[in-house]
Length: 373
Image (cartoon, rainbow, N blue to C red; front, top):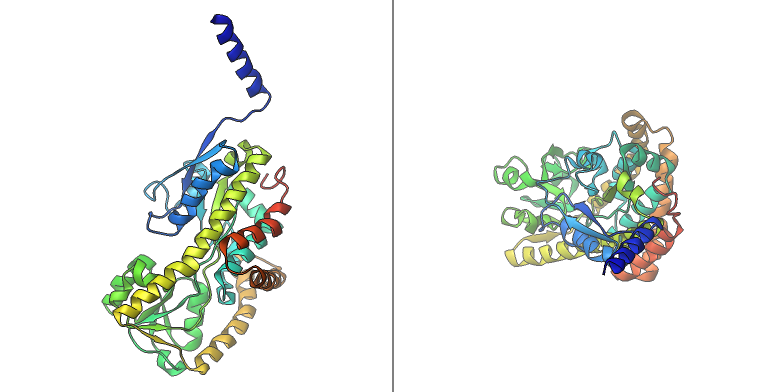
């Protein structure tokens, strides 16, 4: 028996010295509760796919927002409290200015899967973005997108005159700039406080996802859905991997991690960008909310804003983010939006087909010996 035990111990030692990897459970932080799509399906899918894509050498344990939320995610990642986290560049523009810049292009968004794929390819192929992640101590592993934002209001809006003077919740600077452009007043209110602000008459509505009707019970207050496309929230880093955790993985484990993450990113965008908003719209119809397609004049002034704002964003990038070649970077992102519009038109909106296209066009071209190192 002693000889057998010795032989087993010796074999185990030899395997370890030869680089055979032990199973590693990664600490995963969606920064949101189970009811939010950042948790389910985003991080749930990652946890399910990790062992499948890494031959069981990587698994995941999902931590709650009491451990790490989107506001303190940078610190949680840098300290190693979490090893994979949901990081939003617009929360940390000083650390990730090149990624945050793409968030200022919200009004280019007309198709969530297009925007998620374009953002993913942009960051993977942007040298300045990659350098920012290295300084931060994290590795980028994909983005996703919301649905196309609309107006959810207590007053009807059909013409540009109807919206003048209205107080509208803004979820970010591009939406605030649009509101000011058309004569409304943007109000900086956290999404969790939208219901209270609307119920107290502090705001007349919000620029946001139709899913907010059910997620934040705005269905009990809003009377109108104004179907005016206001772009997408796509400046996301769904999976930021702690650099030490990334370095501890073998190149093949990194490849497997990304395959799992890519599937999760697409599932997330499918849920947030389409399914939840569709369900919310159905519930809103049952509750008696009126859906208004505004007059063409409101579409026209919004299109004028988009073109004017693209010029303004260059100045914002230089003054606020310190980016001197913003015009070229914006042009690059617009090219990627066009590229992915064509790809998704070809493959359709089936999540598996989009995941396969993103894997082929972006992630299969990555060198996992050097990426993120």
